Amino acid sequence: MTLRLPAHLLPADGRFGSGPTKIRREALEALGRASDLMGTSHRQAPVKSLVRRIKEQLAALHGAPEGYEVVLGNGGSTLFWDAAVSSLIDQRSAHGVYGEFSRKFATASARAPFLASPAISEAEPGSIALPTATDADVYAWAQNETSTGAAAPVVRPNGTEGALVVVDATSAAGGMEADLSQTDVYYFAPQKNYSSDGGLWLAFCSPAALERSARITAERWVPDTLNLTVAATNSAADQTLNTPALGTLFLLDQQLRWMLDQGGMSFAAGRTRASSQTVYEWAEGHELATPFVTDPALRSQVVCTIDFSDEVDAAALARQLRANGIVDVEPYRKLGRNQLRIACFTSIDPEDVAQLTRCIDWLLEQPDLEA
Ligand SMILES: *Cc1c(COP(=O)(O)O)cnc(C)c1O
Image 1 (cartoon, rainbow, N blue to C red):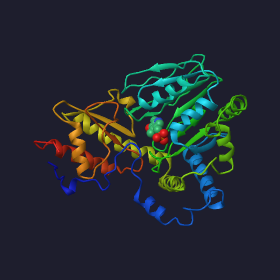
Image 2: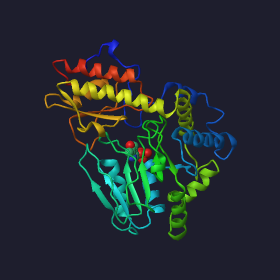
Image 3: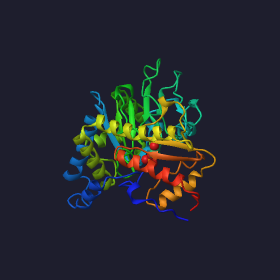
Image 4: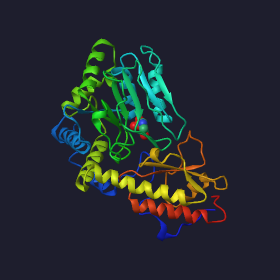
């Protein structure tokens, strides 16, 4: 039976997915009016100035250090892993692996026939492991492991001079602070905190990363689509190698303008911190719920994972929420836990997050959750 949640408990917006996620209605409405842009050439001024504005706003929002460049291309963060394997890893990479996303980059490196086997530091889902100094020339981990809701610090490991630090910020960028000078590559895709559509990757690249890529791609055969230097050359000219999704660029620009208008990164990070604090405090105070990430210092402020005790069927809970228009709080499919995963990305209103906890409370009081 579908249970009807009382209207006064419902969030104004029911999108709590961890990616793709809520896109603000104002941005979607603006997209509907963008007939001077949508359907026009990506080699002409309207799109090129949009790309330039995105690069400038990202650099301002993230406080990009002198000499760092914003590079972008098609294919999302998954493509970026292959680009990094092809264009950045010279002989060997080292990875922190603590969930599905951090594992995928390590696997991409392990499969490359021209590289030595990567060094892996591994931790159970819900915890983190950072790579430690070895003979690697790339050190990689994820700032936010979206599959588990564990967050890792962005600090250059000791004893890694000359190597590149390559941080997956796909679900962190735009919602969590980071000092980019601790990284050589800080890469992401815009369908999470940047509330756009998928299909694009973006990366802040240090001078050392740009130099490394230029050297490797001059020596090694690298397809153009995976060639970071080709992407950097195009990005410097405010374009991408091949046609980008203009709607994705447009929505990203809308989000950047909104974030900067509201106060920049301190606004964004403050909002995600407030939302996630609501979720964690609620779970800690609830006799049937508990945060999956046991160490409070590792709990993500953008993706909250909440375990339920055996007497609650979290999948049934998610189905009931979905039937009421509250969507995508199912756990990461491969994690296989009795859990809800609630995104607290920057666009998501902290008041809606509080309403969501009230909806869950109401459902947990019903005698039968089975939909
Ligand atoms: C979503 C996500 C990815 C994958 O992004 P795509 O654009 O779908 O390839 C990679 N890493 C992390 C941490 C993510 O959250």
